[in-house]
Image 1 (tube, rainbow, N blue to C red):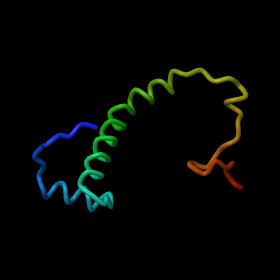
Image 2: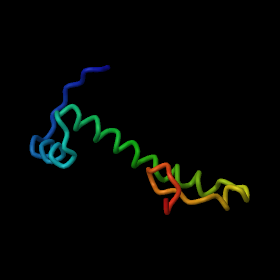
Image 3: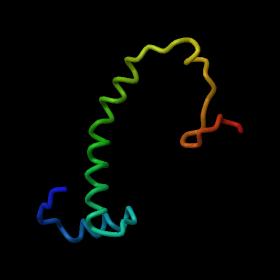
Image 4: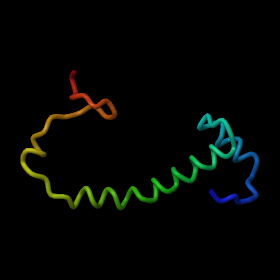
Amino acid sequence: MTVTSIDINPFELKTARDLVGAGSNRETVDLALKTLIAVRRQPTVVERIIAREFTNDQIDAGTMKPGSGHPAGS
């Protein structure tokens, strides 16, 4: 891992740390970077999903509750 020294606004760092409930400044910055990367990649991911062709069995598949791994209604 690379060690980098940067100046960060202490108020913004504390605000971000409080918002995410991070245990350290490093955890806060790591999460901020991962979030930025994910947000910037979202449009590309959405475009790939939109462009995808689905088979009939995929279209007729059951619905799942987000994050549960179980079908909706169960």
